[in-house]
Image (tube, rainbow, N blue to C red; front, side, top):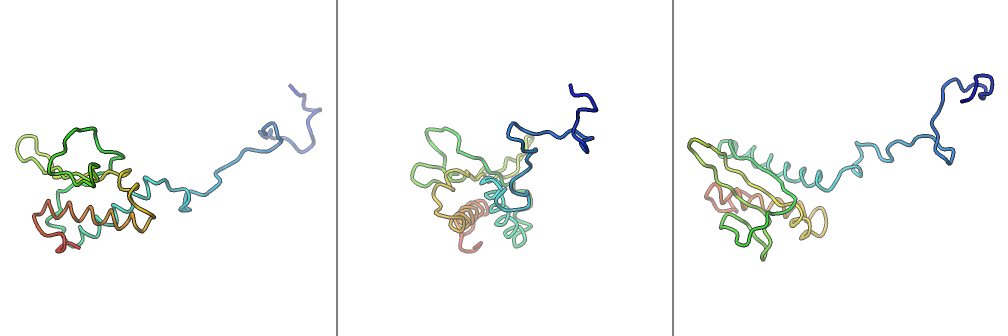
Length: 149
């Protein structure tokens, strides 16, 4: 340990330095800058934008509907008719509500990774997310998707 008389002048507070003589580093990008957002956060924002737009127009019909995002679909050999697929890959799933003792609200689940894989860029992803949500909400409400778009 260094005695007080062997310290450098003006260094009353000890600074932490790495082996290259640099100080501690902070974040390279502030949290408010878009570069700091993860793909999952960007995807969630795209889903929220579409859902908020739909809820403004159809507040009564969508009052109890839950929207969720999962990274990948579950491993199932056969998917039911409530799954929106592209080829053999599920993109979204509609889980209709169950009234009764174990009441469950209707739920629309989007699968992030398959949707991101199909999109060329962020605008394409936004359009794809919008189309998938519209399709699932139309199935839930029993209307034509063109009426919602």
